[in-house]
Length: 315
Image (cartoon, rainbow, N blue to C red; front, side):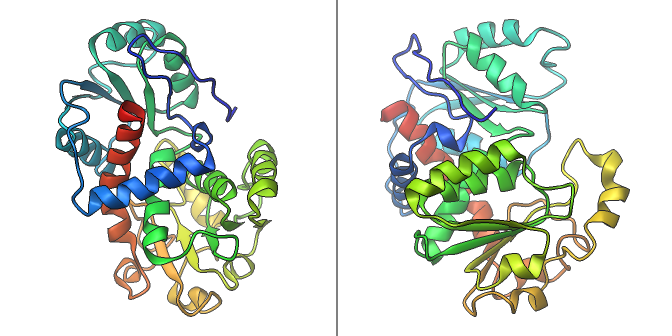
């Protein structure tokens, strides 16, 4: 489910970015290093003359803005296509959409309901596919998160990231990212909301090589103990609205508060990928607490995605 084949494209580029596992650990760290340089003002026009289709099935603030602005800053042009304009697998087949759209553009940035749509698009596309969010992974978010962490902490097995909440796309990408680059990871989920075994097994293989420690439990206090970073996400993701009432019940005790953070290291930072459901995964004051880097994390989507695009199209 999480392994994707490299495709040889007609335009000379040779990769998708559908999963964090599409980059090696050294490539991830290179992208983060480049993102820091871009953030400091070192931006070139490597996308000059290139056009991108932003194919979005789900609404977005940070993803849409950061990609459109990032593409423009790199000299390219992005065209937004919402669900009412395309309709993956509904108005037209995914095969037809991917084949036709890739004949117009130099890259497709897709935010989709089903991860299977991305893998099917990659099969028929002649240009790179970039995952701007699926139900399985959110790799661009993970790169921006690693950039934020690197600005505040070291990336090493001695650094621990603790995730409190759902075993969802965000926590899956974070677990694989940490396992790849060698940063220890713990996650506390309610029972029946754990990460899938395929992810756990893949992360274990990667962590064995990088030196990271991977911990899975159902107790938030256990997960955040001596953590350097504590991260949470909405209990109910887009597309799960019918489960919201049950999830609110099931996730009681998983709210990340300043009191919970007293179990972490004294210099702990707090992260949230947003949007936030205040009163559920966090209290209303949490994102503006002295420990929070959530707003910086949101901004970092821009240089991180510029660095991803630059890596794919410039090498």
